[in-house]
Structure formats: C-alpha cells, structure tokens
Image (cartoon, rainbow, N blue to C red; front, side, top):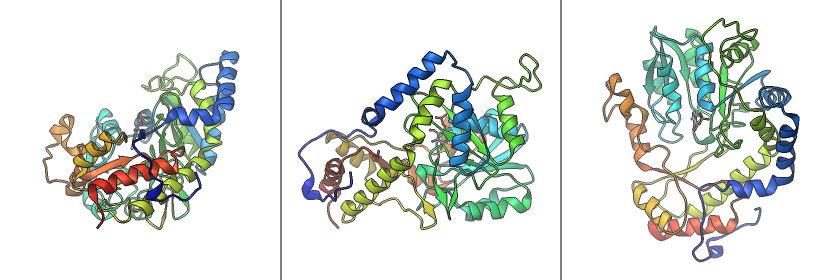
Length: 381
Ligand SMILES: Cc1ncc(COP(=O)(O)O)c(C=O)c1O
C-alpha cells in the first residue's frame, strides 16, 4: 500500500468495487472471529460490558467524557435532538446537501428543518449563509462533517454561542476527523456517529453513538434509548428501543484498534489519486488546511458526472452519487415550499459529484487503473 504508483502501473481491465468489506475482514479475521465468539459464549447480547467498553473508548477517541451507543446514526441524531429538547414549533438549521437523516430526524420530532446552502469547495454548511437562517425559533444547528471533513465549526460556533443555540455535530461520516486540531465531537454540544458498514468505523450491521462532554445530556440519551424507563417498567418520558447490540459493540471495539491505520490508508490513497488525476479536467476534493480529512469518501466533481459514472461502471469500477437530490427538493419536504434554485451550491453539487473507491485496502494498481480510466474519458488538460 505504500509503494509509489504511476499510470504506467495501470493494468488491463479489472474490477474495483466502491468498497470491499471482505478485504477488510481478511486483514482482521482472527481477532474479529474471537470477539464475535466471545459474545456468543457470554450469552449477553443486550447492553453489558462490550457496550459500556465501546462507549468509553469512542468517547476517549473523540476526546470527550461520555458516549451512548444507539441502534443507528439516524437514532443518534434523533435522540440527541430530543435530549436537547427539540420538538414541535422549533426550527433546526442543517445543510441542504447531506444524507436524508440529517434533516428527517428534525422533522420526525415535529420541528422544522431550515436548510442552509453549502460551501462549493468542501460541501459543508457555509457559515457565511448561516446568520440569515437563524431566528428566534432556532432550537439547534446541525452542521454535517460531510465525506470525512469537518465543517468550519469555529465560524459556526461564533454565530450560535452568543445566541445560546446548541450546535450538534452530524459526524456520521467523520469519526476521528479534526478542525484546527479539535476532533469531531469536541467542538459542538454533542456529536453523532454512524457505524453503518461503509463508515470508516463500520459494524456488521447498523449502529450509532452520541458523544458529549456533558454527562446529563448523554444520560438523557441513555434514558431515551430504553423506552424512557428508569428503573425498568417505570417510564418517565416517551422513549424508544434504540440500543446498540453487544455483538456490534464487540466488533467495533476490535475495529477501533485499527481505525488510525485505516484513516492513514485512506489518506495515502487520496494523495495517490491527487497525483494521478492532477492532469485531468476532474475537480479534486478540497481538503482545507485546518482539517484532518479522514476520507470516508473521495468525491470528485465534473459537469460530465453521469457520463463518468457510466464510463467507470463499464470499466468495472464502482462509484456512487452522494447525493443525487438535495434535501430541500425531496418530495417528503414539499410542504416546506422550496423549489429549484433555492440552494444553488447544493443543487450543483448534487448534479456534479461522484465518489470513487477510497477504502484502505485498495491497491496502488487499482488506483492507477481507476485514474487511467478517468484520463481516458476526461483527457489531459
Ligand atoms: C451525514 C449522515 N448523517 C446521518 C446518517 C445516518 O446514519 P445511519 O445510516 O447509521 O442511520 C448517515 C449515514 O449514512 C450520514 O451519512
């Protein structure tokens, strides 16, 4: 993985999937199998030491004191927002260009998602456009650290803190990412992670976590994830069943030990793509100097996106469009009254971006092959 590659290394036709979880499993099979069997042997599948262990380890990794494991990244957002008191009549600001759950969780709580456009370079919430989104009803702001690069949190916090508005980090794609040396989770009032298998820290199914400095906030999430009951069968608030399985926690604890090496692998792959694609018309991801980008996705940009996707698919290369339709134009949000042109940067990104394979086990030859196929379509400048 560390050898330098050039386009001359590009082999003939080969298959390069967008993500290869079997390749990852092969690198850690003995320790992962051991952890899975230990859970099976324990007979302890709900809560227990694997879950509390993972909560402590992910919180420490994120440089905060507390974590609450939940059933998914979506539930992490839902329960964190609920714990912050978000409900009907409130407005919550988030980006118009993200995965659906960044906004759906706001609406599911009866609050109104207020969309903010993105910076065209990083695809993250544009702080310059945030002030005009804030009103007396704003109950929280949810910036998304998209593709593994933190949003400009100091600029966002500078607008929200004086107004007393909590900032909840949607760090579903960004565990371990940093901005000016501060880690995702360390900057907002809390951060939400997803352990969906495609994330840098991915389980063998769904999972998520809320981390925060504030023990009371995390305690509230813990209450909400267990039907609002404490003790059992005594329900203080309307919660739900949103626990993280012990099996997922055990798997994630093993994988957490490899996470820094996997981040480094992704960063090295990104650097290789940058070298090899430098002479093409493809726009490369902008990694801001303030950021530690963990490259959950390596997203390139071209007005010929659909042709590039087709061309790479024909050549055996897996790609994905994250996301083809911005949130304000989703049918389920029609009642918000938005139309095309409301958030031009989000709409342009949705039309032009394409994620390439970036997973850590990708070989230099595979990167050279993908790059050579891009050169073949989009040519040298
Ligand atoms: C930005 C963002 N927010 C929230 C989520 C929701 O996480 P999950 O799929 O674990 O529910 C995701 C996952 O894809 C995401 O990418």
